[in-house]
Image 1 (cartoon, one colour):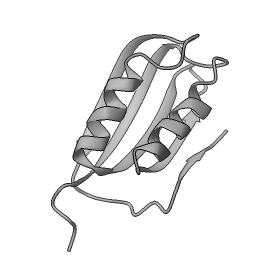
Image 2 (cartoon, one colour; image 1 turned 60 degrees about the vertical axis):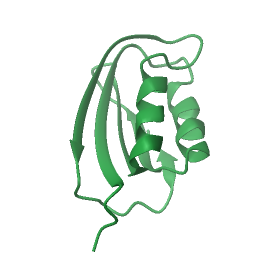
Image 3 (cartoon, one colour; image 1 turned 30 degrees about the horizontal axis):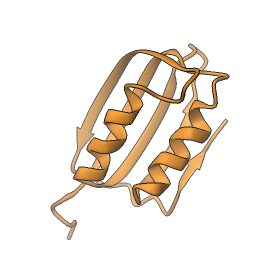
Length: 95
């Protein structure tokens, strides 16, 4: 049975989000919040990530994603939330 406060979130971040250390910064941020999942660059120039864990921690990550690292310029954040967990072991960066 899933813990009720745990959630899964799929997010696409648009703007100037590649080649500005977005993936590495997101990985650090997510790990510091105790979240699991992955982050990767997309061919269209966006960054896609899936994260799961405590709902409050997910909210904190989402707030951070709207800003991103110093050199990023986030124009849009698309979020899809679900209660269905995938059971990631860690939070990793993918290519």
